[in-house]
Every structure is written in C-alpha cells, then in structure tokens.
Amino acid sequence: MVTDPAIELVVNTVSASNALLRASRRVFRPFGLSEAQFNVLQVLQDADDQLSQRELSDILIVDRSNITGLIDRMEKAAWVKRQPAPGDRRAYRVALTPDGRRLWRQANAAYVQAIARVTVNLTPAQIKAVSRVLPVMERSAHALELELAAAE
Image (cartoon, rainbow, N blue to C red):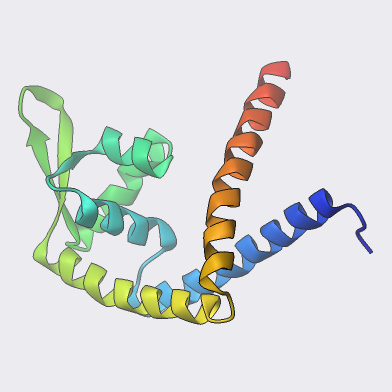
C-alpha cells in the first residue's frame, strides 16, 4: 500500500493515462485511425491554414523523421495532401482533404462521447483542478527528463 501522497498521485496518473490511451485506441480503431493520425487531423482541423511538416512535428512533439512517415501514410489514405511550400523547395505544407475533414468529424464525435463517459463521475471543480495540476506535473517531468539526459 502506497502511503506517500506524491507517489500515489504519480502512480494513479500513470495508470489513468495508460487506461485512457487503451480506450482511445479502441475509439479510433473503427475509423482506421491511430491516435497519432487523429492528432494530426485535429491539429490541421484547428489550423486556419496549411501547416508545414515542421510545424506539425513541433506542435505534436513528434520527431521530424516520424512525422514524414505518418504524413506519407495519411496522404496515401487521401486524408491529407502535401503541397510545396512557397519559397522553399525542400519544405511542404500539409492540409486536410475533404475526406480527411469528414473522417475527423466522425472520429471526433466518437472521441467527444468517450470523453464524456470518462468524466461523467467528476464534478466540474474536479475537472478544473486536475486540468490545472497535470500541466504542472508534465513540465516538472520534462525538466527532470532533460536534467537526467544531460547527466548521461
């Protein structure tokens, strides 16, 4: 039994995160989407215009080599399209296709329903409290990761 509240918080957060990831995989599976692909669709949907692959990589915190393969697969499925970036022959801009936008709407509706089911037993105050705490923990964990990496 864990008696340290900080350890209990981290263990519960990791456990909840793992459960949420497993559930999200099942939410997206009927649409033929991975979580990463859904996230690309979400970011492009939220963007006012096309984004470069570099911008997508930065927003999603995905290695640039991984974003290329991800966009390749999504372009092959006709969910996104690449266009050469004006003024830079090496760069591409990525935008949703009509099929990609339609897929995002369907998958997002299922995702919103899933989120409602996950949070149904939480009060609005609890949701706000957790929403304030988790980013602080994330920043601290990221700082620790960088510190440990520098010490290697």
